[in-house]
Image (cartoon, rainbow, N blue to C red; front, side, top):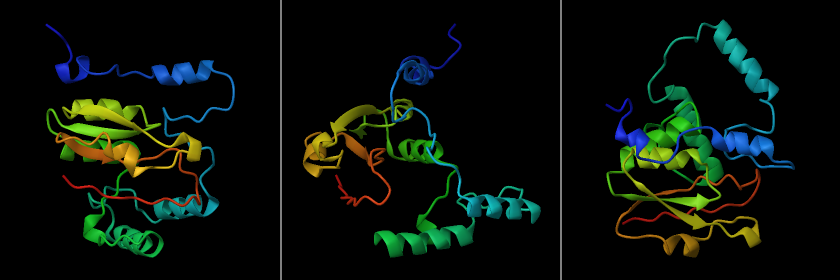
Length: 184
């Protein structure tokens, strides 16, 4: 009798093989296999964290995120990105892994397709497959600095497309990006 469920054993390999392979390579690599920022946490964020701990903010909070934080994020999205969702439309997670897992599990059913932009985070493959979906990849425009091009994505959209993961690890801070939404 197998020890693990088919959703784990019948889908892509789940290990840290990419981490090992990257460690064996020489040169200046852009690591997409782990969420490992190239910069340290800014001092004001460290100090705010210490102050929060000293103030006793050490227990579970609102499942969707503190209301004050969601309100501040709503203001930031409106001001900097022109996106108006309201605090109730924001879910705070502990990072991309939790956020993308929740999104894929909420959106994808057995047989649905999810489009990943290349280059993509390798972990997304397992999450999509775990949700019962099939991964379809779409290239970014490498010649233009890995810009997102809707024409390259639209070629891969089918009746089974349920999600397009617009998580672009190639975007540099301060770069101009534009998102387009599709419905099916």
